[in-house]
Amino acid sequence: MKNIVPQKARDWYALQSQRDRRALVFLVCIAFISGVYMGFKPLHKFRNKAGEEYHKAAGDLAVLKKFSPSTSQGSAGSLKTTIETTAQKNNLTLDTVEVVEGGIKVSGGKIAFNQFLLWLDELYMQNSILATKLSITRHLDTGYVSVSVTFVALGG
Image (tube, rainbow, N blue to C red; front, top):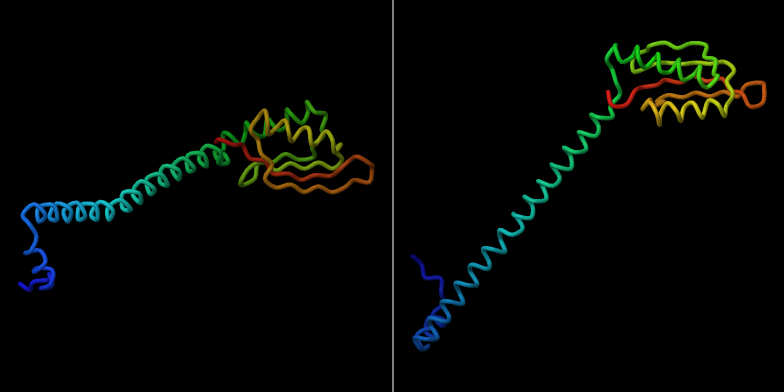
């Protein structure tokens, strides 16, 4: 095996007292252990960071699942009923309320704009029903609009 320590260093080490040699060996061991520790410390931090990112992603996925749109047919029927009931309560006359892929599609030809906004707010805040597609056209009469809206229920 090739000796990796230069001859000058070996000569210098040989000239040191026994006490100094032990201290030197001790310091070299401490330096080696520190180097190994410093080498593994970033790996430990990386592992912890990866774990934190995994848990954050898992939490985000749980939130997305909780608030994903409902797709079951049973919930579409109750969603339609809720929309019709709240529209009547808010004195809104809807032309059509139909179940479509991705939710419930509602349209109305002459709806008071302010009442419509209050109705959307009530659907979202009290019933967790979200408008995903919205088309509003100004009506000939001031303060009225024609609307076409697609709704989904949050939290399936």
